[in-house]
Length: 315
Ligand SMILES: [Fe+2]
Ligand SMILES: [Fe+2]
Image (cartoon, rainbow, N blue to C red; front, side, top):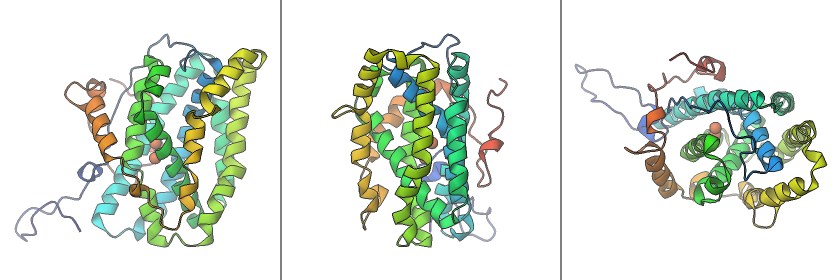
């Protein structure tokens, strides 16, 4: 157990560990999105850009689900350091949702009806809400593994940076960094209640049967509504950029089955060096986002996405 202050009975009460103390700091960012955002931000391709818009749209309901499923078992977490990591995880996810809400507003202003994939996934998650809390946590652990693999792929090469326009690129880099920083929190809470039950085997079929159709429907809706379905060359190129041999989605999906391995743990795959490099790139003295950091978030284990304040805080 880690303690941050003296145990001297006459001294100050030991300060509770925070997410920042255990490498999961909530960064209160206030992204400045340009008023005139570029239309096709992913490699100048509509199909791939709408895939990215769909991903952004589903983060707020998805991360709300993740947080709820972990918070349900919070009282089982006795160890001080894990409690702090849960607090850091919760706060980071809340801020992610808020900033994606803002990006989604910008997509909406651009004419993309991103509320459709958002609502489709929110509806799919109501099905998972009806499963047991243990099952929900197993599904969250699986989806957090997915986001961590995706994050490592985004940060691990310059492909994403080359393809995605500067208007929105750093928001994705920041989100990816924090997904890696907290990648093992849900798993460690899940281990407390036991990962050897049937819930783990059921997680993938459940997510595939509920969330995946909502994701595909949401993306297809955007493609039809934007008229991209009538542009076969764009569809072909977008498909190649995302699903072609050796491309982003294939690389990510290839790493998913390890979740079922008996000795799986997110930290078995070491990403600390990558995280340190990106912390410096984004938040070092000359970091790309150092100037966009606001006051630290009030860190609380009771924070829910709706507590994160208005989507556009007044300056
Ligand atoms: Fe997140
Ligand atoms: Fe996450």
